[in-house]
Length: 61
Image (cartoon, rainbow, N blue to C red):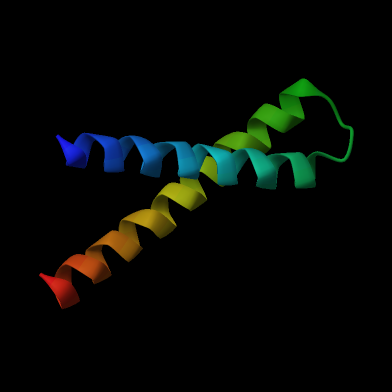
């Protein structure tokens, strides 16, 4: 059961980081640009977390 909580917190963290990056890069260009930047930031953040999880799994499991 605790792994569900950890996965939920991890997903919320990824979304939060992606929103912060998108807001920083938006610079007042509108909603579509913000959504585009959010998608790219979400993909990048998800990739970083996946690589970090794999490294953690390899070295600590």
